[in-house]
Length: 528
Ligand SMILES: Nc1nc2c(c(=O)[nH]1)N[C@H]1C(S)=C(S)[C@@H](COP(=O)(O)O)O[C@H]1N2
Ligand SMILES: [Mo]
Image (cartoon, rainbow, N blue to C red; front, side):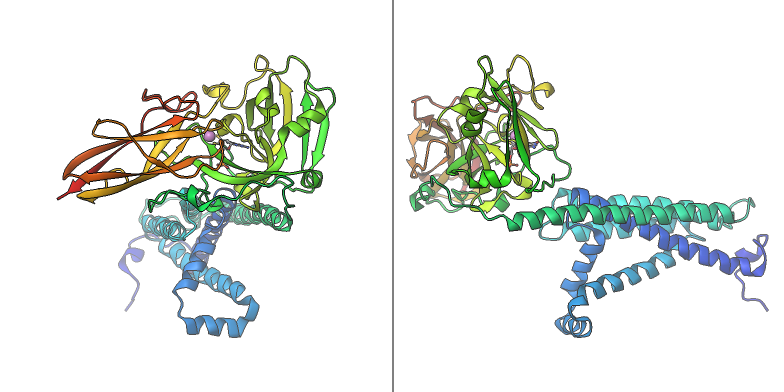
């Protein structure tokens, strides 16, 4: 009596008796190689687009977080400082076993096997997305990896063991299988190696940043008084912490610049070309300044704006050494990754704190904010002034050159428009009737804020209390008490008046080409 499943008997045998264990071995290998490609691809995508979200690392992190203390202690006791390595080895072995099993499943249920790979990819993506430092890009590595792995598995399985349920066709093609297996294995190793190499660059840049010791500023900014902060709870901090500072750039992967080899080249319409290195920059008389930075893409009421204490060398110092020639009216700054910004020359030569910044809130610039050197220019939107990972200043003319965003339909100049926003209460909030604390921020950069006014349901404008002004180049916070709010739906509206007496326009303009305008309005429901 035979125990063979009927479907095997119903079809012609696929070869000699040992071929089926051969096929099983090939299928298990197919599973493991596909897993290798998945992890390699994912690691590379993670290194480029989302550091810290490699699925292997994310799953390992979940295992660490989920294991009980006694297991962690036992692992540390057994493996000492190599406990992390042990964790990755064990995780890797478990993944290999699961992958081999999926390969075997694929013999009869190719669709199920593909589904399993994609489901594991989704699990890896979820693990990465749930980490505290996750961003939108965190799901990419596992997703891209799973797609690559599923494709490789399909191809390998087809060559290792054509499905027995299909028409009798060509049997397993050994050479085709081995050929593809070699390609998949090589691709897995190469992507993983490339990922490790890219990570290494990141680590080197982080290490270089850790070594930077910022000097004291020759000219210090005055300390931010407590009175600069709006007393209304929930209003953003007056100084934006680096970790919360908005980030906007075209860089797919953060440029890694070695400060030891960094040089700024000043050239173009100048008397003499000037070059300056990082150490020379640090040894120059540095200035500290509180400056608010705003993005032209910030919608009315949006949060693409931040305020930091910057440390740097005034740009006019290096321009002065180069000696701009008559006729020049623009400086085209260029980053190491080819971004360019067009800044009016006169703005860089006047007495404002336009800086070659090396420090942000007491630290070297974070990598994502332009390490080792960026520009910060009070009064201009970032896209025409705040070049990160700065490499070059070319003195030129607006008539001769256009910057990155200008050729894409944005303005060639970008003074920051006066703006104000209500941060508390939030749009859509439900509030109890009675007095309501209202608070927010306003900015009229390089001019200053003279007044902030509020209006309820289109009623008369009433003056808010202004928090202390720190400088003309920083935002200014405010607070206002909405007396005796009555039940129902209401609209709160804010506008600012700048220090030259000009009231913020209520005319609505989109962000393209040179910045949004209009009065920020929030709708709230007052309950009885
Ligand atoms: N190299 C480089 N610098 C850049 C950009 C960029 O895309 N690449 N974007 C600019 C824009 S549009 C803005 S608003 C600011 C944002 O600076 P942050 O990311 O430090 O907030 O950087 C500017 N500097
Ligand atoms: Mo921007």
